[in-house]
Image 1 (cartoon, rainbow, N blue to C red):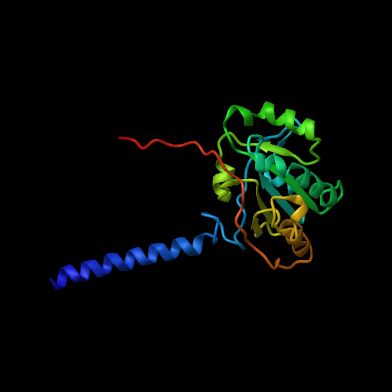
Image 2 (image 1 turned 135 degrees about the horizontal axis):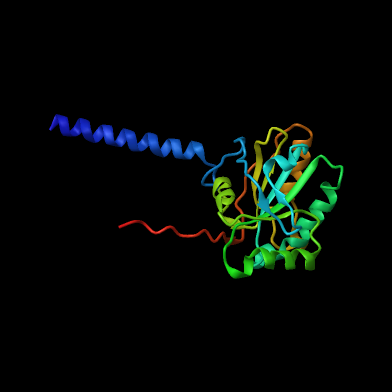
Amino acid sequence: MAARQSISLLILSICFLCSTHTELAAGKYNPVLNAGDPAPTWEKLPATDGKTYSSDSFKDKDVLVIAFTCNSCPYAVDYEDRLNRLAQKYATKDSPVGVIAVNVNLVPADSLEKMKAQAEKKKFVFPYLFDKTQKIGQQFGATRTPEFFVLNKDRKVVYMGAMDDATDASKVKRDYVAQAIEAALAGKQPETQETIAIGCNVRYKRIRRKK
């Protein structure tokens, strides 16, 4: 009986340590990253402008904003003008800030060709990347469209979550991404480092378990 109790206590201790480790490794809403973590890097991804971009393409930027978005989500579409205005304000040619958007959905409405059409229609002023492997989304722990990540000069995550505090643009009181950009440019941490992203689920490909 004593041996069984010891084994049970050992199993419970292991479970507790595993759950604690999981909580420490991820944010409150993000399943992978926590604020302050080094941001994942990525290799060449095609964009709607015909170019390819890697994380090194933005190494000269002191701040990098990454927006996970798509064509097929109405929430993401509603934020396109706001994202464009953000890039126009902060990510001009010689600015220390970079702004990019990334799509990882694999449905026909979110194909690279459809992305090119949308980028041209809305006159995007930022690179719009496509990752058919979906790895960049998984590594960032992106679960919604739109979902935003702000990285500082050391490429650590200073903010992740929603762009602002209201899906209705006329009711926005706090622009979390803009506040994070300003803080990062000043070498500081933003007051808010994580919020829950509101939008459609990222459509990750399901991997069937082998029998």
